[in-house]
Length: 302
Image (tube, rainbow, N blue to C red; front, side, top):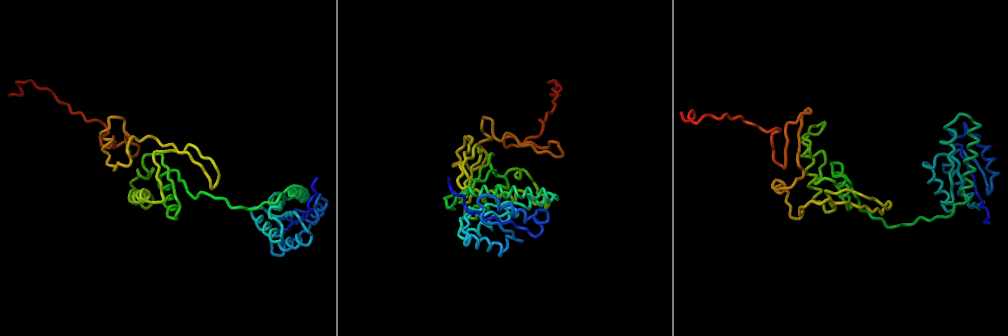
């Protein structure tokens, strides 16, 4: 069976944040009874320069092989103590942190219960760190290409910002054209600026930008992989139009005998339809019928 490593335990007072409701000296005494613990200390502020120097010095002088710090949240100071371990000559991943502030002293005013829980958290950290193995950070290749899903004004702006930073961007839009809901607006709130005046230059910039690949009439159907190495499957719907030859004149869907896309666009005001456009040709909202009364031939001649 492998020999138990030498473990150092450091309990922080954090001013009065921990010490007010946790009996820190009692936690230190309890830590000394745990298997593998060669050293247990307490200090007012372990995250301070003297506190970090204490860890570095003990690693060298006491031949510590593992370190446990019982203090605040790992989100705040885990990197701080890992750096101290590394500078003391210990692999930074042979370190474990117990959160006594957020998980004990800040959630109860019962000193006995807070101290008992602190003992359990320290014991758990000690047993865990004994099983740690050294790790080494390494560099792996990543794909810096970015996919933006959705070609509305937000997606357009995101794609342009990333592309202008020198990254390759794939912009995927489910409709036949980018622009989104803003393309149907007349004015924008609160300045009442012309929506098209803002949107259309950005649409042109997307189409002409060398770092942006525009994929329209398509949807993302699957995403796999991990950060830096995603694999995305995109399904493109049939257009029945040669996009290399299309100049956007719109004559094809005026003349097409099949059901065209888009089939209609309806404008409404206060919930009432006042204009409808079908196949690119404006029509009244209802057919106009003119009544014509037939007259006898002789009356018409007279």
